[in-house]
Length: 250
Image (tube, rainbow, N blue to C red; front, side, top):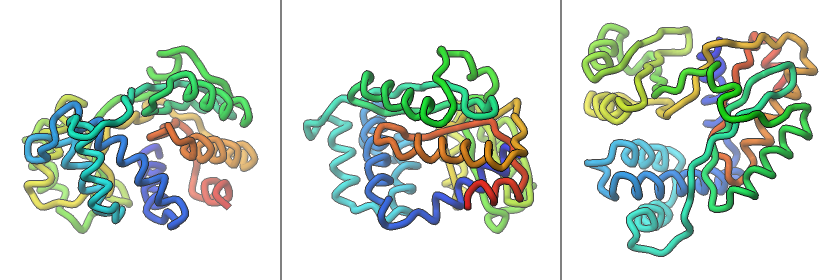
């Protein structure tokens, strides 16, 4: 169900309105800057940057924005210094959350994330308090029209992936975070398009959410956190069936 929830989230993200595109571009710019800083500005030698450039293209991000973000990372243009942080917390119904943040002000980020949890019946937790309920791994989602299961398993496992999972929505590839670049490169070289490609926190223990009021609050907390400027990604271990999920997003 956690994988199903991930596919549902990807579909919602793809339906993002024009009004929120500025937020999408801002997140991508920060990620591109960090990727260029860590691995250089040449996408041929930087798989993380290459993956982000594909995301930027799919989001119709202006080329000038992309170029500036890369140059800030390589030092060719001045820019603020970003840090990557991870916050952990509990939401309504005991649902565990992991929040990835990219910020130039740790104090501001901590206050905003703490406030979001407090407003919606949750609380921040100490580092490690909830992370054990997640697998920190590379995760790729690929639609079924891209490849057969056998072909995809051959590509992924040869590149060092740990597993290929099949669901009604499509295929999910998981790999160690240190193998992410290699697996990403193999998928790209095979001419396959991913619906999602990221270093993710995948729930290993899920919390069933059957009460619609609780489900609505969990979704509100997700949305509130994701709307914060410094937040790059939000992961949780809630498990909802289709009916509850649909009602929660009304």
